[in-house]
Amino acid sequence: MSTRDKIERKCDELKSLLLSKNDAYGNAALEPIGIFSQLESGESIKVRIDDKLSRIQNRGINDNTEDTVMDLAGYLILLMISLGDE
Image (tube, rainbow, N blue to C red; front, side, top):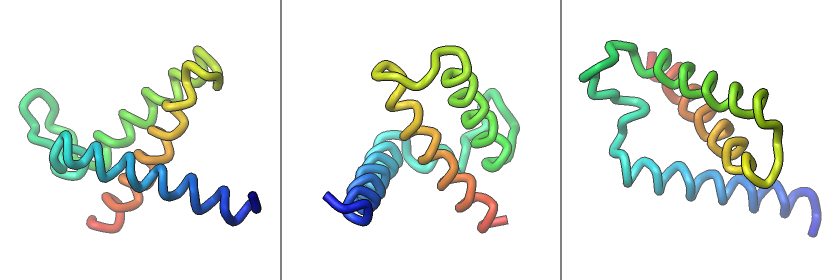
């Protein structure tokens, strides 16, 4: 499989993950309901990114944290969307 094919496959996986989570949680990342936290969407997403980075720092990247890397990529895309909406 070529690098191009691998990139396309990973991007498709990430797209599927983001759409699935958006269906499951509504648009909570970009439109937080603000019950406990009053953070704007961009700041809220940055907190989630910090959580993912902390998990990687504490546990490393291995079979148990591989989904964390995909989640991190997803949150970075959501942050780009949030920054574009500001």
